[in-house]
Image (spheres, helix red, strand yellow):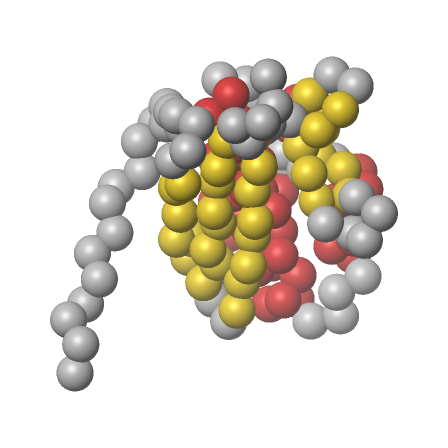
Length: 127
């Protein structure tokens, strides 16, 4: 049996130097009040996408993952989560827009069952 992995507590204002990668573990089964707070930060398009889930549990987990993504990105940028401009690329992959183009703050979000992993990296080739 392998030892349990300990995850560090999340900083309130994380910083991400170029060349460093951060991985966040997110529990997707949250109390109703937390779910409501996270969902309140989402855009109209995100709410529309969430409405397409037939199972409430899956919809709630998607809302939690997306709201937490916004909260974490906002922490790095020092901005409000609801003010972030998340768009989908040609193949549906989400990205953060910064001005006229993609932000150098890149991310990947994967979730299964009740857990999500979020990877953050600063694109060193963007200014």
